[in-house]
Image (cartoon, rainbow, N blue to C red):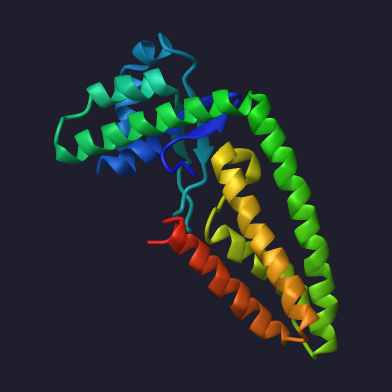
Length: 218
């Protein structure tokens, strides 16, 4: 859902690694700025970091990755030389911080909670039908029926990916529709005696049509 920001301890953060990658800077150059002006960053919150193991197979010093809240990330961007890449990244970062904060507010609403419960209940109905499909596929000679849950989950996620708890109410509603389409298609196709492989193809086609109609697939 969000590539540049993440939630940690009920707050929103980005990392020095993400900023380095997004601005085409070396990570050690970014961490050097944070360390040089650490007192400045502390004015906007605790300076948090994790030590990641060195990727060098022969060993080496751990890599220190900093977690930066919105204010700290904004401050860091002011210390970077402005160019087209930095400006574009800065705009994307601001947008994602804003969207994530809106999402956190939405998660506190009754609408989101009710939508999450309804989505979960619908998922249970879908998995009940997929359980029947697993047995159905075994009877037709499937030797990989244990993969069916994963395959159909991946199919649904091709339209709306991510964890349910990280989805907006709109995204949860879309996922519920997708899973309902899969459930109903499986039920109808099994009642017609269709081969389990063809059932998947039918579900895939219907999901792709849904995605095209709703502009969720380019």
